[in-house]
Amino acid sequence: MDKDILRPLAGELAAIGSLDGQKYNEKLYRAVNGLNMIRPVVLLDELPWNQLNADGELTLMCEDPYLRSVELSMRRTLYRWKHCRGDMVVPPYYELYRVINIGDCGIKIKENTLAADAGNNIVSHHYEDQFPDMESLSKLHVPSISVNDELTRQRYELLDGIFGDIYPIRVFGYTHAGYYMPWDDLSMWRGVEPIYTDLYDNPELLHAFMRKYLDMRLELLTRLEDLGLLDSYHPVLHCTAGYVDDLPGEIKNGKVTRRNLWGRGTAQVFAQVSPAMHDEFEIEYARKFFDGFGLVYYGCCEPLHDKIRICEKLPNLRKLSITPWADVRKAAEQMGNKYVLSRKPNPASVAVNRLDEDALRKDILETLSICRENGTPCEFILKDISSVAYNPQNLTNWERVVMETVRNY
Image (cartoon, rainbow, N blue to C red; front, top):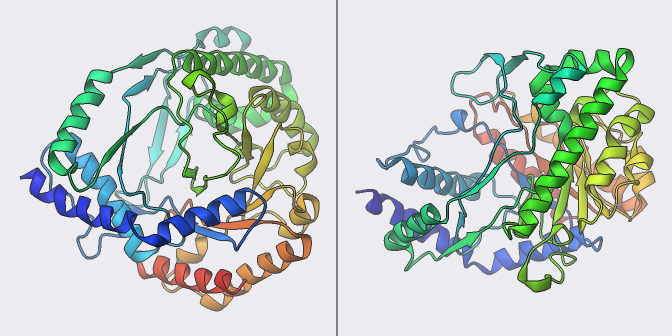
């Protein structure tokens, strides 16, 4: 029975979540994000799960489709804890999210994909351009919101009957309202090449899109606030440490608003765009969206070392992503102790037959030295891992080397 499969997993997670070390890791998160770092936080996320099931510990056994999804989440959490935990925080309860569905913006992605590794969710995409002119912007509309609390209740009662006595269930609301990534959406609605061309040849079209997108997202955010659907629960913020003493802050009238949330922005497609153009087409809109948010974390895979000054226009900026392609020294010298440097070591280091531990240690020590010189709080986040060359030990070895290094910080 599915219950016999889930209860042992729930018991393991409950025991792990009750360890004293969980509170210490949460303390580390809060110290880093509060700009009073004890030591850097280390996390690994976005793993190539299709390459990690060497011993069958990720094999699903439940028959019920929903319970299989619960089992999947549990097994993946346990895998990370056993093999590459870093400073992950495992709560002593199961996280059940209210069934809140956000509709589309009137656009369906049209694409062709090409996979090089069967079962891997990392594939190549070719997108059809659906916004070639001003008239096409009329397709866009504010997404609908639907809430199914009856289904949430049913799921709660189902899980409570299976493992609630040993692993309590906590219900959370919508936690992604602060995510503002228009260029990720537009890249999937158009493809990257038309965007780059229009930055020069048709900037009016891109500005028109950004104005409409911003208005839609702000209206959606306001509706979510008014309906009381937002939740300030952010133990992890897009793979990084999320706990911070500044948030949620005071919650007025029992209703979470944007002032209680992290804002999360990025413009990955602007990796090769000039600071002036990045400012004009992205930052000027993003700062309007993030106005009123408690804190903001900006950047993902785009190098920002030459764009720190324009990023500083974002209200309540607290954390910046510094990618494998960014100049850490340039970034830290500008950031000082004003922001968290969220360092993203190159995931290609684990996509080899055997991890080069000496090269990895040297890379981490260099970042630590630079951040120490500039008083910059930092964290190390290994993410976007498309391959470990079917050698899961690479993740375990990466975690060991980096944890040994930061513990001697």
